[in-house]
Length: 190
Image (cartoon, rainbow, N blue to C red; front, side, top):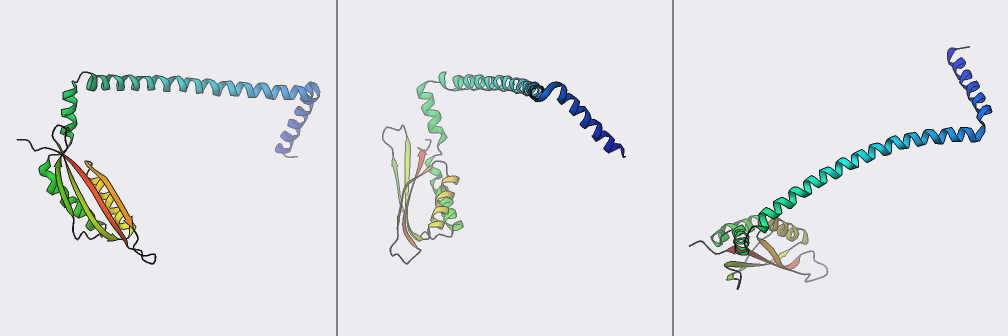
């Protein structure tokens, strides 16, 4: 007999003796006790990790509260308004922004034949201006979608005021689209 067979047979005999001594209920009890010990060890580890994560979360939360209190609570409303307005570019960058819009159209393989442009001051805004840019476009939906996404990603001070899409005929893939962007600026420094 090989040593493997001897070991297997010895293990079977030992298991049989334990089974005879403890019975089925005793074996189940031993198995449950072992499972409880393993579960206790893992539960203890999980509890330790939870305590660490809660401590880290509390540290981050207290830092955020301190930072927000320092940046917002100690600032006068007029200063907040000034900071907000200073986030916007000045209106003299509108030409460069138009070039970016036309570049986005070129990348999207969209032809902008004509456009409407209108710069107005927003009443009660403390010097903010809006620049409405409207383009009628005849193109597939994918190109228009790409164009709008590129403009909004490239110009964070722009918003999509209107996107009107019409299909002139059911058989055509080309859409009649009206794309209306509004770009926001602060008045030029004098």
